[in-house]
Length: 349
Image (cartoon, rainbow, N blue to C red; front, top):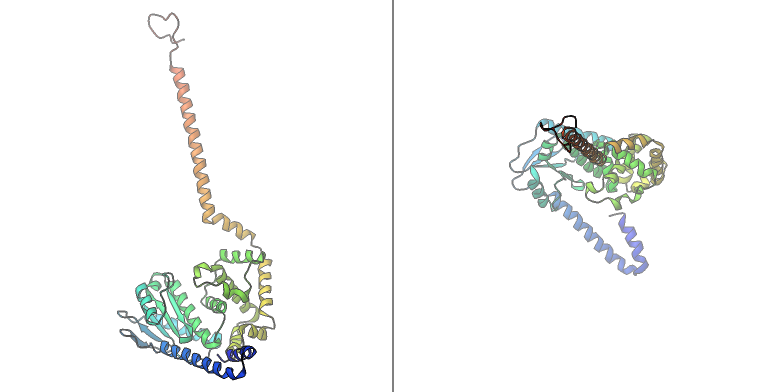
């Protein structure tokens, strides 16, 4: 809000008399206060009817009606993740995030309605409201998919800590760092796909990434893979303390691009180009051949070819059997003479 006001004033001064600027400044302040009040109202939903609140060392668990308290091992995972992520990202915050635990899709969407959020697709098992320090998590999903459930929970915790340590950030930064710290790296096949796009110069420029990121993760798996792979590369190139330094600059008012340049000495675009060149330098041909061999489309084609070959072989075998039967019938048949003998068939005929 502080950064927007000078821009608003400068642009307004070109088209309006200065006497009007105070009015628009006052209007902007009122709108900002409304946003803050809305945020406070959202945060004030800390005592929902029927929900149970349990304080722990670093966070507050909010249990949906009918749910039991999670095991200590579950709480420890959250504690350790908060401590580790805050340490890695340089967050000095001591606030306790609220982690709402629900069971099943109906409970998940019911709570979202309480928070003023619309329903989410069935494949969304968790949601973070970083500015409010709120995480909604479906425990039923975690019980069905233990490993993925824990990774997803860690991913959402990272979103909350990023808001603490860096303020407003590009979405690709949020998703890239969250995936990186939750160890949700793409598989070898997806990495090779990204490398092929890089080789042909088809990757979306990193500064334009947010324009192409849809809400649905399933519609943008390659873009998310680019985000986390680039973040992992910057961790290796600039060191583990690099992102914490960039986030401190962002918290102080810099944009991510500016802070990236200040801390690395390279523009974001040039770093992205270096990363793409590193992908081009690697050999992806053996992996692509392997992908082709094991892909379901290739397997389907091979099954069809095998079926056609088998059908052709069967047809040939049937024709051979039919021909053999005809020859056997000809050998066993009696070709009568013009003047047959009295005892009937002439075996020498």
